[in-house]
Image (cartoon, rainbow, N blue to C red; front, side, top):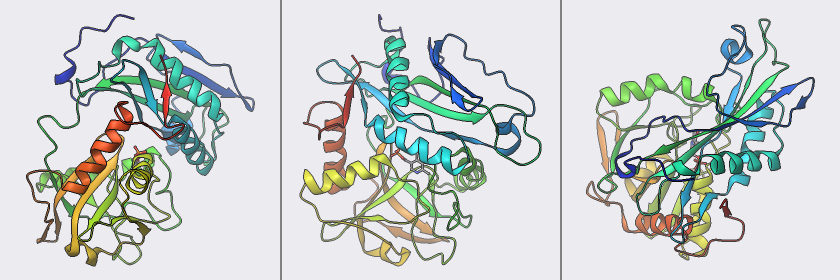
Length: 341
Ligand SMILES: *Cc1c(COP(=O)(O)O)cnc(C)c1O
């Protein structure tokens, strides 16, 4: 398909309707064969499970054009696996993993005119999701579900360079021990909105959530995992049952060990350690890594030595290596890049 007439470099992170989306329905205990459709509207009962009791889970990944001109996606098998984990935790049926990857491929192919060209910094954001669609009024799981995949072109996350951000320690908690913090569900985002809106009002870019039980350990932000670099160059990342297993973070850990030869520690990370860190970053599909320059704990400022002007040197290497792998400039580990066309 010919490329759409879009000013790729000036796109923001918003929804733009593309030509096709994928839909499959689950009824009488089975998923139907699924179709691509032009219809961007979802019509469901006023009493649908998703509307009453928030029975919905989602994923997020990107397609982009590599240096050689291929359209690729990054590790979609891990999104398939994670959607399954999320669904099972909310008593929803699993969508078969191989069909998940096929649905991604079909949706991107059908919208290839919306995949931003190499070098623009823009990407095609892909949103697979699933929700309970039949009427549910007594509290129980729905019997019918819809799985959909749509995509939307998004602009470069960092316009004019990655400026470090300022985050605050949140007084609101994100996820209880043994709760749902480790799944990608709308419910975790609904409850984070008040915390992020108030953070923005007070001049902070993001919230740092601590573990609710002791408020001494670092968990994650509303939508990204943490990585830290110690003063002796070790990559440290929090390990907790209540953080979302970020695919970006898991990929960065591999890159740190196997490509950069760094020492990596995945362990409990105490807030008390923040003052001794050299670099801090937030990692997720949207930005890959956003550098953090300052952490504010109730008025007490912790300024990372990497400063407010640019990414720290180790963060920069991790960022350049992972984005190099994604864009086809650096050889990828086996199975990381799925070529679509
Ligand atoms: C999606 C998400 C992330 C990032 O995961 P990626 O797979 O790297 O995109 C981190 N934390 C939360 C809470 C998320 O929902």
